[in-house]
Amino acid sequence: MKIHLLIAIGIISLLVIFYFIFFSNKVNENPITKIESKIAKIERQLEIFEEERISKEWNQMIRKYLTLPLDNGYGSHAIVLLAALYVSKSGPILELGMGTASTPLLHRLAYEQKRFLLSADSDQRWINYFSSFTENNTLHQLKYIEIKSEMGIEWASANLAYYKNWTVVFIDHRPGSRRQFDLMGYSHRSDIVVLHDTEQSSLYQYSQGLLLYRYQYRFTKLKTYTDALSRKNETLIKMIRHLLESTPDYYFSNITLNENV
Ligand SMILES: *[C@@H]1O[C@H](CO)[C@@H](O)[C@H](O)[C@H]1NC(C)=O
Ligand SMILES: *[C@@H]1O[C@H](CO)[C@@H](O)[C@H](O)[C@H]1NC(C)=O
Ligand SMILES: *[C@@H]1O[C@H](CO)[C@@H](O)[C@H](O)[C@H]1NC(C)=O
Ligand SMILES: *[C@@H]1O[C@H](CO)[C@@H](O)[C@H](O)[C@H]1NC(C)=O
Image 1: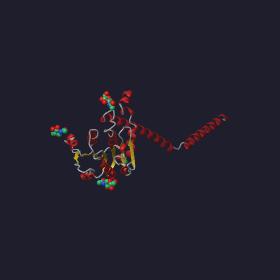
Image 2: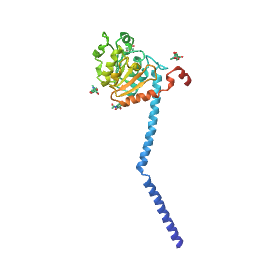
Image 3: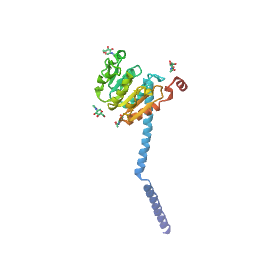
């Protein structure tokens, strides 16, 4: 009798102890905080995956679209244009000033991203040189701007505000003295402006125009500088900066390229 009683008491007290252990555990680990911390962990993991995906895609784009090692002078804007088109993804593009480093690159990218591209130049030879780009392709148009004045005022009357707001505007045209006015004019009609030759900012008198852009990034890794500018979108400029700063050194010169191969 006594033994049975003792066993019963023992079992009951064990149950009580287990109950308290279980109960107190439940109280200490709030299930909501537990789930939240799990979600945060998953989100961090997803961010890492996304970061790796973008970095991989960016490297593939550099190899696919650019000539390596990257050009230090006339073509130093190419990688900045590539980044601007990559981060903006859609919307019309305006190229002020054509050339072998920008026009074929923009043509290929715009074609693949299905974006409208208007390329304009004051030299008829560039228009003729790239005339095949507009064959069978209504998304790419070329426009010759006949310049007679020293200051290139004809750029203003050329009616390039066709789309009113451009997603990307590339500024690299002649005469150089005209650029400052288009830098100002397009600040309200663009998401991103890519401006070339900014190491000679005072020569081109860019400073007044630059004041209109709240978000700026100057890419100085190549000898001829290029700015990525936006009046309204900080995210786009931050993304361009991130891509350019994460670009491996071996794309920049033959010497380092050889070291890394
Ligand atoms: C444009 O289309 C025509 C007819 O289909 C073709 O003969 C021509 O080669 C095409 N041009 C280009 C540049 O693809
Ligand atoms: C162009 O952008 C300006 C300034 O952000 C805006 O006021 C205007 O409505 C836009 N125009 C078009 C056609 O989207
Ligand atoms: C900036 O651009 C990004 C990417 O295109 C877009 O998601 C975002 O809404 C834009 N922000 C502003 C303030 O326009
Ligand atoms: C890099 O190497 C290639 C192939 O050897 C050569 O054609 C090119 O001129 C070199 N570029 C520079 C900037 O040294």
